[in-house]
Length: 517
Image (tube, rainbow, N blue to C red; front, side, top):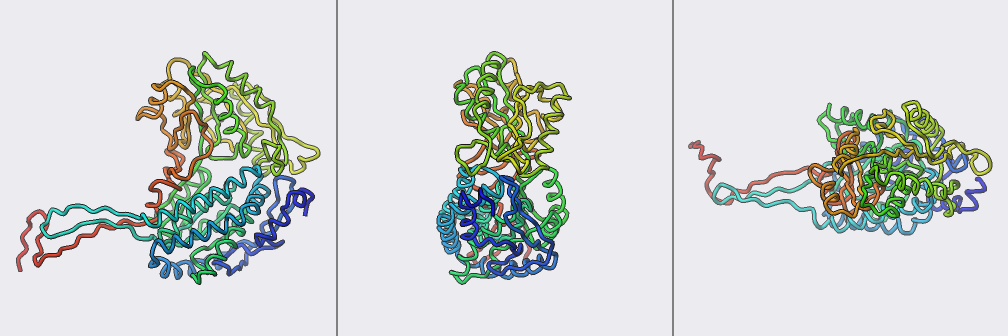
């Protein structure tokens, strides 16, 4: 194990979470097996090997599905508050393992330790939310047009929920889905990113303890690991009524097509191209904080990362100078060291995409005002550390229209009123997160109106990055239209049924139809 791993307690964290040198990547509860190829997990922090995972095969997947479908028979009839108690216990286990799991997230993915711990806290928070929700899975009662009849609707569990998660949030997104799916009575099969497989194994070890302690079927929580091919088995499987997929728009379109072809459902959380509008009435200090964190947090590898800063021409130079000055204070390095602001990209492929974006914006006529570049030397041996860059650009540039998963921020200038800025903000294919910085009530309300932001998330005087679990999370257009986490997102994990009860001795037909026998 590397010096960094020893210095920051990664070795102990791996032991606490049950991570070994070689791990099976398939599990039904605590039953581990796998017969596929070996996946090596290298840390982007220092390039060192963390552990190996044996991937799942098609035969392994079939064992998982058999266990999951069998477990569903038991779990779906368990009262929802009892299922909530299982989720509560899982949340308590997460509290115990928060430090260890947060360190693993930081070391395997590369985000800062504060963000790694914050991601685990999101898991705990969604468990708390789901526990309360388990006593509130409501339907509606409607008046029937027929005498002596009662009509209402209720929700039932769907079955097996497939979850495909991305590397940038290797544990929280799974928890957003599973905590709600479990209290709804569903069982889950999780296909984690092949870039962060050890995080999935750690989470499975934690929930397996809870299932065992409560004498519940292990198939309630299952994981599979591997490349896109193992995920395709799930998206094409008629036994999986819902696939929740987080990742690129390209991937999401494939998932949606596969599920639709078999009349299954998909919940998609895809790309973002998020903007902050800065009006003449903006608080510049707040703007800088929101823009910089949004652009460089998680090294620009959040779906809600700030990609575009749309600034009014009257304050353009002032805002530009302030943001550039703030970038000069950024510390780039080991994310486990809490003195650093920016950690590495996930791998060298991401670095190549970052370099290509900077070349492209210049080729299209943009002007780089904060130089990028790949860092090398002591502390940067993994080759995954890059400098956050800023470029002046135009919204119609092809590269600006594209989501680059790296710390590249584009400054765009607008003139006229706030509606012109909103038009620029909406002028991309993605529609996840958006924000406006203004102290003008009329501008804020215009931004939130029907003619305002077309994104699933629209904020006033906070940035685009991050979201509270109490609200539904998701976006429109090429972001996929899905909603996870809070509000009434639980409904997507259930099927709706309308019921009519006749408590008379007659059978009147609708619309006065006569059918006498």
